[in-house]
Image (cartoon, rainbow, N blue to C red):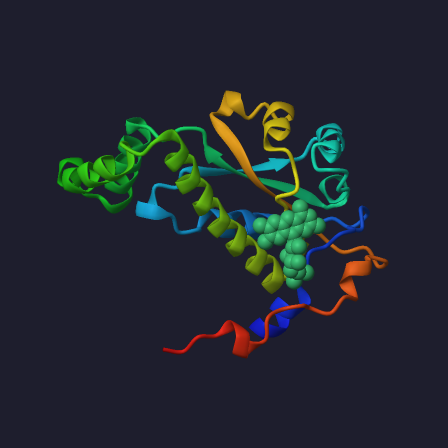
Length: 209
Ligand SMILES: Cc1cc2nc3c(=O)[nH]c(=O)nc-3n(C[C@H](O)[C@H](O)[C@H](O)COP(=O)(O)O)c2cc1C
C-alpha cells in the first residue's frame, strides 16, 4: 500500500453514489479505527454515532446547509463528545484499566487524582474545547483509514450542531455533535474528484530548525 498515493486519492467528496454501499466489514474497520483513536489520558470522552435511519438522514440535510452528502453517502458518522466530563467518567475509566490490565484499582489512585486535579477544575468552555479537540484526532484517524481502505469521505464542520443534537436526540445520550463524516463511494460525476489538490508547497510548509 502506497500511503502517499492513498492520501492523494482521498478528497472531500461532494457527491456520493447513493447506490453504492460499503461492506459491513469495511464499516466495522472504520468504526474500530475511530475507537482506537488516542485521547488525552486515554479518557475517550467521545462516541461515534452511526445514523442509519434514512428519514433522519434526509432531515439532517437542512441542518447541514443543504449538503446532500449526509443523505447520499453509504453511511453517516457523527463524531460526538460527552456533554460534560465528571468524576464518574474518570472512575469508570479506572475500572476499565483495572479490569483490562488486571491491576488493583487502588493502585491507580495517583493517576486518578492527577486526572481529577487537571480536568475537573476546568471551566465548562475549557472542558468542551478540550473534548472537542480530541474529536478532531478521531476525524484524522477516520479520514486516513478511509484513504487506506479506498473509501471516500467528506470531513464536515458545515452543519448546525444544536440542530443535529435535537434531530438525533443526542441530549438524552449525554452527547454533543462535533463533526460529521459521510463515507461511501464517490459519484462518477463528482466535480471535486477532478480538482487538483491545493496545498502549500513543501518550502512553505516545512520549517527545519
Ligand atoms: C474540519 C473540516 C471541516 C470541513 N467541512 C466541510 C464541509 O462542511 N463541507 C465540505 O464539503 N467540505 C468540508 N471540508 C473539506 C475541506 O474543504 C477540504 O478538506 C480541503 O479543502 C482540502 O481538500 P481535500 O480534502 O479535497 O484534499 C472540511 C474539512 C475539514 C478538515
